[in-house]
Image (cartoon, rainbow over all chains, first blue to last red; front, side, top):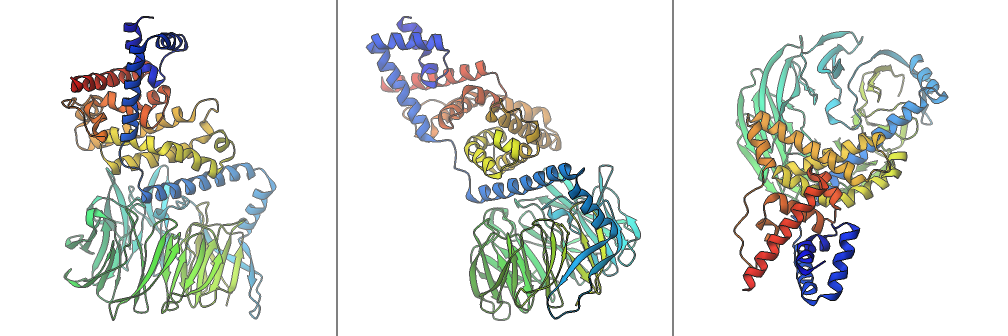
Amino acid sequence: MNCRQTQSRLELHVLGGLGPLEEAAVREHLAGCADCRDAEADCRLLVADIAAAGDGPPPRAAFMAALHRATADEIRRQNRRVWMRRAAGGAAAAAAAVALAVGAWRLAWREGTTPVGAAAEQWRLDGAAADAASPADGVVVRGGSMYFLSRHEGEQAAVAVELASGRRRWRGQGGCAGYLSADDSRVYCLAGAGRGRFDLLALDAATGRRLWRFAGQKETALSGPCPAVPLGQGRVAWSCGGAVHVLDAATGEPLWRHDAGPGGAPVAVAGAAGQLYLAAPARFCCLDVATGRTVWQLDTPAVGVGRRRPLLALADGRAYVLSAAAGAGELWSLDLATRRVGWSVPAGEARHLLATQVGPFVRGGDVRAYDGRTGRLLWRREASGCGAMTAQGGLLYAVDSRGAGRLLALHQADGEEAWAMDGLRSCDAFRRVGRSGYVKTSDGVIHAIALRTP
Amino acid sequence: MGRFARSGDAEAFAELMARSLPAALAVARRTLGDEASAEDAVQEAFLRVVRGRAGYAPPRPFANWFFTILRNVCTDLLRARARDERLAEAAVERAAADRPAAELTWPPDAADLLALLPAGDGDVLALRIVHGLSFREVAAALGISEEAAKKRAQRGLRRLRQAARLAEL
């Protein structure tokens, strides 16, 4: 190989792109040619410059956290599917099937209460959407009705059933993507509109007929869109694409909007007593629901890292906000009367935030309760799972997904177990209405259970 | 990847993801043109890997498989974007066509080196030199043949060498 032939191959030589024969020939020539060695050295310097220059910014920490969370959730979900397929012909599946078919779960009482022994199933419905860890599939209970997302022959629609009997009242038109919420007259759901956009649909709660459709902007939150929030006063709020829209609930007419987050950062909203509270990165606002006027606002600890939506809950005159960064969440409280930040504590990984008079409850890999006045950790309980918590009558409900699954009813004040129900796996919230409980299990079956519990 | 494919081991997958993430973002960023879309595409690609692990054939290098998936995701996103904007043909052409080379001046800032080249050549060099992908992996990532990847790399590096020589005169 001569100098010209060698020079023409130098680039691929330093990039490791030559075949073994050509590579050997180039090396042989370089060993005996100082000029070509100089050229090779220049070429390597250039490659080193390119390597040092890098290629764009490193992955954002918030993105990496979201990515790890999303893939970990998906791995868990896929592994469960594999496990379920393997178990389908085995004893484990048989045992589970018996438990569900009989419609009875083993109940365990805390000492001092009356043991009953079993919880009878009142009715059950199959066919509800039940993607693990999907916030889109949540069941809504409002008045005497239950609303849920159903998939049938590839089409998704909202379905309404009577809470008492499970009898179907209506099935809405297709195209509903879930994220249901409801007020007394309407059911709200989102509909995909392409290019990362969602529209908000309102359905007549009595008939399922579509009332109106409001076009949203491209969703900016990594965690996806969020449901509409009925505000009363004939209004509904929807946080979408970094803005909050308040619409006439009857007509869907936009009444006002508030651009909250810089750069379209996702915000969380909650309504109470004619006011709309909004948690945005480094800012907390109180807006007048009727006019959209900013009643007050204050700078706050930064929340909503990157494109993750913060969590917001109101209770007992306080707002609790949790930045939703994976593994690095910060929980803080704000006194709505004095408009001052009360306390803040590191809250670790968090998926759901709920607040009662006791204080805020945070769910990540476990369930934690904090004192609403001081931020002190009251108690902590292992209960891994993806479902939201609910609270009623001094109890906190959460489903622990470990093992065969277990519904826990915990005393809010001390975390002690009031009662539990074994053999129940769910990624949705348990809802208690009177002496009945409602839960959608991971197989997409909704169970109504008569509870003779304390 | 074999460990993950066999057992669904989350730790094994996290290792794979950590190794592939910078290059994956680079590929998606170059194809889609903005960081947010690139992140969406990369996340979707990794989720498809998780969902499709049963279809992974162990002797096949993970990177080849993964970058083929990522390329498909990017193509889907481009198509969806183009369809919605009624600019399908233009978008596909934009994505496929090399950007015109900037005028070469020397010495450039280090970060601007690859920006001096037509996109096709710069992409190959970035993936090979900065992200350490093999030419086979580069080819899978960009949807071209291994020979074409080598040709682009050679052409791009030669162009930079010539520019450096001219600047020294």
